[in-house]
Amino acid sequence: MTDKPDQTRLKTKKYIRNKSAIRIPISLHFYAVEIVVIILVVFIINIYIQSIVKNYIAKECNDRIDIACKSTQNFATAFQQQIGASNERSDENISYYLYNTIASSADLSNQASIALYHLNEETGEYIVLWPTAQYSYSYANSAKKVVGSVIEQKGYEDLNVTQTLDLEGIPIYYRTLRFMTVSNVSEAENLVDIDNTNTTANYNTPIDLGNYYLCVYVNSSSYYSFMAAMTLALVQAALLAIVIAGILSIMMTYPIIFSSQKLSRFAKRVAKGDFKPLKGHIVSKELSELGDVMNQMAYKLEESDIEQKTFFQNASHELRTPLMSIQGYAEGLKFGVFESDEDRENAIDVIIDETGRLSGLVENLLSISKMDMSRSGNYEVKKQNVDVSKLCETIIDRVRGNFIHEDKTIINEIKVRNKYIYANENDLIRCLENIFSNCLRYCEKAVSFKCNVDDVGSNIVFEISDDGPGISPEVVDHLFERFSKGADGKHGIGLALAKAIAEEHNGTVKAYNKPDGGACFDVIIPVVRHRDQLTKINNDSTN
Image (cartoon, rainbow, N blue to C red; front, top):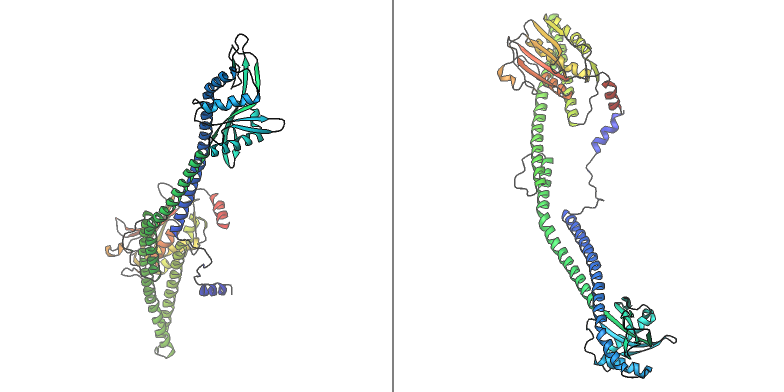
């Protein structure tokens, strides 16, 4: 009852394609990665450029202001000469002299713009004396805005320090200088201390001329315009790179897409039973290796398909022969073909023998099918730690009756004690039984059975040999193939099953002729070195 649901599930199970999954072409994967890389590179470069350019702009503007401030020394000298020639120092005269000095001076540096203004700190009112609208309307208007912003943020209080202000989104770098005169005790000359340093030894106490200020400033809009142009050029280059990346991604991924489609068609062909190898060149190294592996897979599947068909054909033939014998003798008994009691007894014996032969063949077929399923991963052979000496005693007990019935001798030589192998005991017994059966069929008087450990000590060797004619040369290369039979062979499954069982236990089977005559079979199985490994192995298999 428990097997029916599984059988029903297997019968109704179909391949269902996952339609809900989002499938993105490989070219878009490449393109997306390229776009992300381009955007990150442009973003990092832009941040790096802006940080460098901003520092450069600040340094450049400050250097220009320094040059402009140094050039005002000549302007100060000229102003000193004009105001020194006059004894009157009213606001009108000072304003007049400052204005004339600036208008007539050819020594002011063009590195920065200047604005001369008078400030009434009590009322906050100011007058821009230079530049005037007659000189340049746009220049005068710009200077008035700068002076207004300087007064608004009280930038005139920090003298000789380069400061910044934001004028309609444009950074302005400026420095404020205040006009003062000083009198000399020994000389009646007046000078202007523009820098407020008063470091000259000939100068004494400064005399304030009033709130007259000279604002030296640099408009950095041209620098930031250049930086914006660089950013725009960088964005344009990024867009061009994205377009080129799209073209390159298509060119790069087309061979991969073409190869993938080619491999997909090949896989569909294999699924339909067409195992012809894939031909043609595949560009990608990885996909080329995949194509080679798929060709190997197709070759193995073709071999497996041929073996499977041959197996079913041979199995059908082997099953048909005993069934026909059983059917024929059974019909003879039913319809009274055999008149004497002796004939009927013989018929019954034939039916029993053929039934036993049929039963053994079916068991071997089931066992070898189980080994195939285990090799493919669809079935797990249950194993445990097995005492080798007890296994040898069991196999001898199993086959002793056959030897007695055939009036032949079995010679035992068991040299193994306290050795264990990790195995399925029933399968391993069947493996040895099949080899014993083969040797018993061809031996003349006796079969020798030895069990010992190899020279390395890592394998148990079960040696079964006979005193018969040995293995014929035409059979030796196909001895362990399925349905390969010798002259007196039965159905050709026994040795193939023995090899499959040995390989399932990580061992092997060897067959050869002894120097003194007769066939010899060595079944080699790895030994468990320590008995305490049994607990670990069993626990691992249980978990």
